[in-house]
Image (cartoon, rainbow, N blue to C red; front, side, top):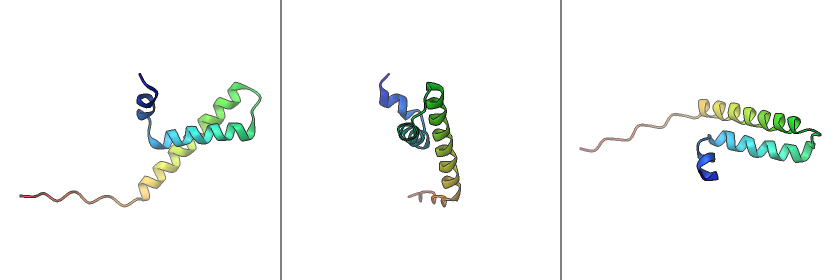
Length: 68
């Protein structure tokens, strides 16, 4: 299994949250690996919630027209 196949199984929000979590680790600098994991988990959760809220406010796409 390639890394991109693994990432494709997740939503875009989760990948963005993972990247934000990694950035937060470099800024905060936790002392333990558990703290680092918690920061990544919180980043993923926040990004998924923000993505869900964004999708709920986005207008629905019109269905494609059928041609005869």
